Image (cartoon, rainbow, N blue to C red; front, side, top):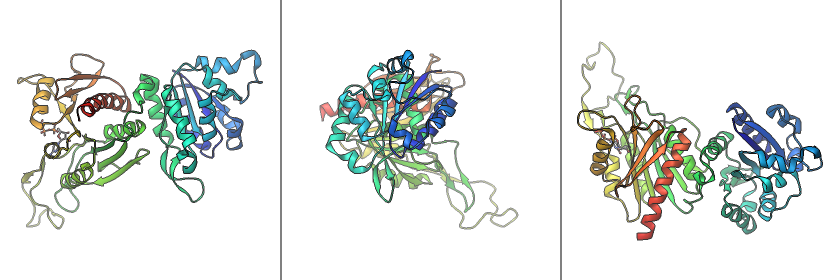
Length: 409
Ligand code: CTP
């Protein structure tokens, strides 16, 4: 159980802080909510007290013997400010201590995550952008706001990301520190495939696979948090898009191939995490195959699908990184890493994210979930963790390689 301070500043998105608080307490954390006086115009202290089980104060004059303005920050493992208004970001950047939340920010030595929410004009104003840059330079995580419907009829960047996205990313920072969400992909365009393709047999049946798309979703969420422009080519995944991510839905391997070729044109990084069917039924019946009919099949002839990863490698522009995924097991012919190195060479990609799927074996070390192999011979262990934490480890490996290739462009 960790000790989280949830700072809430005065924007209409403060109502979502109650859901975020709920997500933190359900994950077993002890949460102390510190609203600004403005936040209490939107959500009452009673809501935060009931959901957190802790007292809620906004100023430094309450609970004076507790020295709350010092203790709350000192005792925290993580501070998350959601929503962070333009005014809160400005006060934090200057180092003001004019309410309990800003005083807490000055006494906290743990990682701090700001989740901005405001009108687009306020977000894009140079004053706000400079404040954000200042906070990032000092080591804080400032998530980019989501794009979408704002209060009133307006739409644009400035929305608070969904509480589930914030909770997942806060969990990564809690586990691995603020560096796990470094703002190092700003100006980069990233295209990720996720999910599993379905290959139709007739209008109602298909050959599919069990891929949930969760790892691809986490990769997209973390890339967006690290500042990238993200496109997610999603094969049959029915969950809402992570914040700041454009989703291109596809069904079959052929549709995924077309979408990836189109989206990858301007990409700096292409990640093929989708489970693409190697085979499809050789013919797709135009009408349902009925049992007992003349068309009842006794076998399903298969045709080979193109290898999209190999094609994306072949058309790779200079400086673009292409990342493949591989699920491997060891066998008589070699261990997991031997097979993975052979696959990396065969596919020709720059990096290969390797999952050991043999029962109970994780590359000889129980705390490893994936290994990222580089065509340059590099080997990066990504420690065992949730899908977002693993995604952060994968992005760290990609970012290192991206920095190295930018240097040689
Ligand atoms: N992949 C692809 N197109 C396909 C099949 C796979 O782009 N038709 C991509 C996957 O998205 C993944 C990588 O290739 O990034 C590895 O997939 P895998 O199925 O492990 O590779 P295969 O070549 O099918 O290897 P194996 O012989 O082990 O089945």
